Image 1: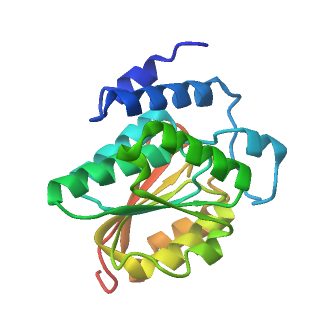
Image 2: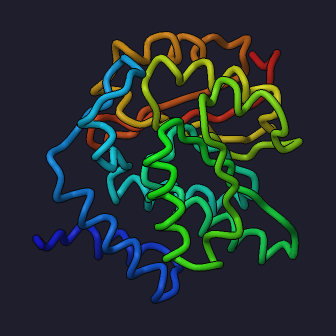
Length: 231
């Protein structure tokens, strides 16, 4: 198995137990050993996609973890769980934030493909209760599974999904975003054409967002909800 220094750099930037660290190292190694796959614009079943992690790059995972820790986020929605790699970072941060607050928290993960959902559950179980207990996996079309039972206030939305599903997901979660909540979308430069409607929505000041794109591989859009009616 090849060695990827970026994995050690990433794991050095997070607070993590030896058990979770081992799982993350193994999963990142598997993901980076694959031929890169960009999801594209069609949310259709694809044999290649079903077999691949299609995961956030390690440095992006570290950034997301640090954003969650810095904001004290405890209620997170992830659109596009795949094999559950990035979900581990979300759950790790949410659990640590909840422990500091002496309160609860939840990561709502979404995955349409049963085979990927099953693999994700295996990976979370391997990571242990430190991770597993914070995750609620909703299987099926997220346009249906996210219609109900969202947290009263959502702190963070991660969009790592087929591009046509990005805006519908945001529209579902938008009413529950708290002021200061973040929306992060992956590969917004590499898949710019597919993300046009999402970017237009975020750029419309009446929707209450301010955004930037961080210069990570493929582009990483970061938006903050400042509230509707703010000029």
